[in-house]
Image 1 (tube, rainbow, N blue to C red):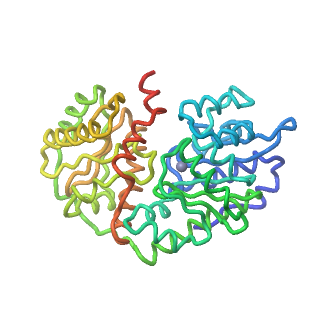
Image 2 (cartoon, rainbow, N blue to C red):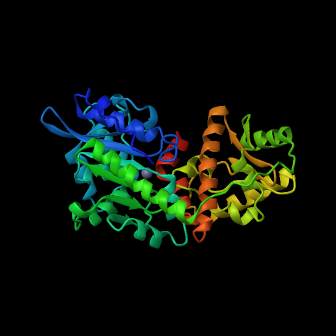
Image 3 (tube, protein in one colour):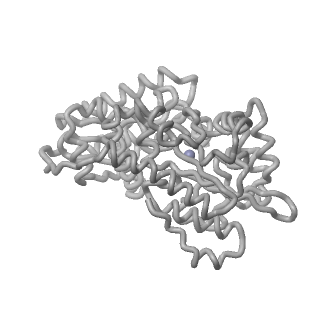
Length: 391
Ligand SMILES: [Zn+2]
């Protein structure tokens, strides 16, 4: 991965936020680093004598972010929040909102506290495909340790307050001079520096290490398949629209990767091992529906049955999400994404493309392994997501 930082462009910048917008967009422009609202960045600056963290606001995409996409939050309030022993994510979000010096700005990212406690001016965070491909693996911990001896490595913790608190305790004993970055298992990578270019280029260097490791140990060769199965798309769309309660937009993917994936021998064990990075679950659910013999109704019934079993196993009275699939892998045909509209179906398809690639490569390293079922449930039924449903 190459640095795209251009000193000629950067020399025009006159303030911290301009640098922050520039390198955020460089990161956001690469879909192997962040996808559709994923990842976040921040800069610590001073406004009217007060230290302010400008952190990516929710609803903004790093690829297209503007200065107004960053939420300005009082740094000392965020740092104070990190020291609390208990805080619900709902209270964290409202506390952060209260600490904003511009109430019209977007809500700060749920990872704002984490950005605040890293004592460097610029903090960059991505969900790099290469890093999570290696991490989402039965041998993930040992591979990551080998590749990142100079990084702080944190086992998987749910995003939000509990992650910020975990890192707050880890950071107390850290020697910052020897820490090049942070890897969050099954989630992503952080780099930081007082200089925007160095922070960004540390990200590029960190991700390049993972890419080299994958090139050496998990070269993916996509075989050329032609579709060897048919599916009645109209029928699929009718059944799903009825189950979901709205007209479903159906997007078929028969790219070489999708066909290669759909031609794997045991789809039920290959394709049902969970998400690439936790937040994807909100869009894709944990698993796709598998259609192996053209029987759509049977596949949907079996997906819903499994979903209900998962919900019942972990629920403590959350509102159940519609138990229908958001995408399908159709044996020897390809994949199909389902959305409320074309945009949503395309986002789901993009995520699937990155996930399929990661699964196939991670299998070459010992076996793809994502977060546990119970961690999936916590993410999918996060109180912040439940709050949206209650509205
Ligand atoms: Zn993240």
